[in-house]
Length: 184
Image: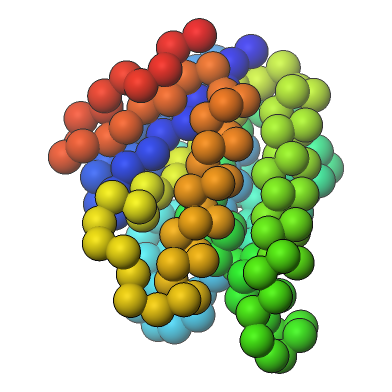
């Protein structure tokens, strides 16, 4: 089928637009949620997102290895929403830091992120479904003051570039309005 990348800033309407695209699709929907509830406020956000989705949609909560997990869970879904790559990259960095419990190993994390996105791209190409991928663009503001934030910005930017290269459509969300960046 096709693949769509929706990119924009925080609260720009990305998730809403993704859900509207999915509602126009025929067949079942698999919603892949990458968020982890690290605190009460995040738990409330996750719960609000759950309530906003149609109850007929299947949900897969996956914090890493999403290509593999989608492959196991897609079933007969004709649409897959991945919301969002921003949190997926954050999860990977945090999981890596917890495992090694020391200075950030930039080369190792970059390899893990690249492998994660490569695995997702292979998954997208494998299935005859519409993949709708949500991500943030965090590189439009000031240069972050600390190394970890700059690395995160760089890694997410690379992941977004990899996905944009391999998706059919790319939309930039600005104040709830989708701006077409790429059409197949």
